[in-house]
Image (cartoon, rainbow, N blue to C red):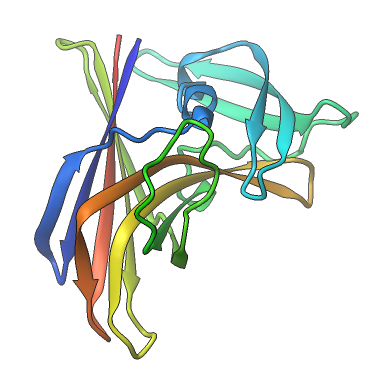
Length: 202
């Protein structure tokens, strides 16, 4: 299986930047392939504070004639009960984006944006299936409006996932951080829309 991430930035509904991410984090290898692994899975991930958290995931698939859907329960190795929730990273509420001014290159061990100034939720997710090319394509979109009263420059963009540690605690992970060579200027009251395109090829 091959996974590629593409990123598109629009400002005031006009395309500003488009490119392929070449800056995945170590967490990407653990998290982004969840929908494709229908079994129990245990692994360590790094949260946004830099702490290693060991998760156990129980992935249960529901299959129909033309579709397959998975629900993910998360728990740490010390928890005795699985969260009663059914959150997956293919639900908008469990995805969000960060914007920042950092320019340091991403490494596999990067777990947070270097200099973040805004976080906002993914509000729309769509999934398409291209059986001829053996691909699943996931689009994740969110928007941010600059209400800070000052001009901001975007140098770095991060994609985050959330998983429930238990019924009241959420663990957040950075799975991709893209550094943009030419910064994107966002003036007061302007908005940017970020779209991630994740392509799974079998």
